[in-house]
Amino acid sequence: MSVTTLRYADTGAFSPFLVDYLARHQALTPFYHRFPALEEFAAQIEEKRQHYTPAARQRLVAALRRQYAGLPQVHPAVQANLGLLEKDTTFTVTTGHQLNLLTGPLYFIYKIVTTLKLSQQLKAAYPQYDFVPVYWMATEDHDFAEINHFTLFGKRYEWNATDTGGPVGRLPLAGLQAEVLDQLPADVPAVFRDAYAQAGTLAEATRRLTHDLFGQYGLVSLDADDPELKQALVPVLEKEIREQASHRAVQQANARLEAAGYKPQVYSRPLNLFFLTDAGKRERLEYDAAQDCVQITVRNTGRCHSQQELLELARQHPEQFSPNVVLRPLYQELLLPNLCYIGGGAEVAYWFQLKGVFEENGVPFPIVLLRNSAQYIGKANAGKLRKLGLAAPDIFRPLPELKKQVGATLGQEEVSLQEPQQQLAAAFRHVADLAQRLDPTLVRAVAAEQQKAAGALAGLEKRLSKAAEAKHETAYSQLAALKDKLMPNGHLQEREDNVLSILINNPHFIDQLLEAFDPLALEFTVLEE
Image (cartoon, rainbow, N blue to C red; front, top):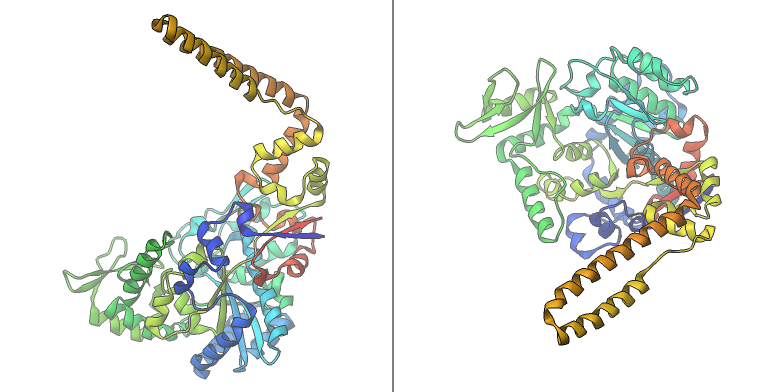
C-alpha cells in the first residue's frame, strides 16, 4: 500500500474556514481552547483532571458496563478499557456520529480510525496516563432520513421504517431484514448482517457492528440516552430553562465569526432542548415569553408548562429531556473524561460556536480535531491512473485540466487559434482606420465583418479541438470514468461510498488505515494499492 499525503487546501474539497483553522489563522484563535498539537495535551489533561469528578467517572463506568452486558461476548480489549476508565489517570478521545445503516458513508470509518490512532499516539507520548477511544452514538437524533440508507457499488439500499420521529436509537428493526439485509451481495461479511439480525433496536445493532469492526482495538461505544446518565444533565437543564444562557453565548460567537468573515454552521434557539414524549417522539421545547410558559411542541397536543413546572420536571425526570446540537457537546463533556473531540468539517465549524456555552457552564472545552480524510485507490484503478500518466493526487484536479495533461502525455497537439485571432483583429483595425478616413459610414460594416470572421475562426478552433480529441477518445473516456469512480457525483469518495465497497475485496482495510493515518499531521491521506 502506497501512502501519499497532501494539504487539505490542495484537494479543493474543504472550506476556507477549515483551511484557515489548520493554518492557525489568528482570526479563529478566540473560538477554540487549544490547538490539536501533541504538546497541547499536557495542559488539557491537567485541566480535565481537575474538573472531572470521581462521581462522574463512577456513573460513566456503571452505565457502560450495563450497556455492554447486552452483548453476547465483549472483546478483551474493550473489557480492559472499561477497567481503565475506573482510574483517575485514564482519559478519553471521542468521536460521534449518527447511527447510519451499515455504517453509512466511508467517513464514519475514518472518524473512528482517527480516534483509535490518536489514542495510541497519546499513550506513546504520555505513558503515565491511559487513553480510551470512544464512539458517542447519536441515539437521540431523530432525523431518520439521514441514516436509513447507504450506497454500495452504485446501488442505493434503503430501509423504510414506520413510526419515525423519535430517537432513532430506540427504533425496532422491523422490515430491515427483507428491505436491506436480504438484498445485500452474497460476499458481504457476515458481521454486517448479524449485527442487525440479532439486535432488537438500531442502537443495539450499531453497538454490535462497531464492536465487531473495532472491538479488537478497544473502541468503547456510549449510548447517552440513559436515565442514569441524564442525571448529569440536571444543572444544565436548570440553567437553560431559567436563563437561556446557551442561546446568548452562541449568538455572541456567531456575531464574532461573521465579523471575521465566516458563516456560522448552526443557529441556536432560546431553548436548545427537546422533550421525549410518552408517544415516543422527540419534540422541540419553545419558550413563549408572552404567556410566561414554556411550550412543548408536540404534534396534536397543547401541552404547556410554566417555567417552575418544567424545572421541577427536569429535576425529577431529566431522562425526558434531550439536548439539541448546541447542548449535545456539553452533555458529552460532562459525562466523559474527554480531552479531544474528533469531527468532520461541519462539526468542527459548529464546535467553534460553542466555547462560550462551555464557559457559561464551567466545563473545560476540549481540543477540537478535524478527522482524517482519505482517498482509497484500489489496484485496478491505480493501474488505470498510471496508464494515463497520472499520479494519485492528480484525481482532485478538474477534469479539463486532467484531459490536457493526458493529451500531452499521449502526444495530442494542442489546438489554439489565439495568434490568428490577434492577427485578424489587427487587420480589421487597419481596415477600420482606413474606413474612418475615407467614408465613416462604412465603420459599422467593417465591425460586423470582423465579428463574423472572428466567429468563424472560433468555430474552426472548436472543430479542430474535437478532431484532436477524437484521436484519443478512448483514453479520455477512461479518464472521465475513472474520475467519476474515484470522486462519485463530483464529491469526495468518503462522502458517497460505503466501507463494504473496499472491505469485500480488501479485508485488511481498517488495519491499513490505522497504519496510514496521522491525526495530528493535519493532512489528507491517499492510499493506493
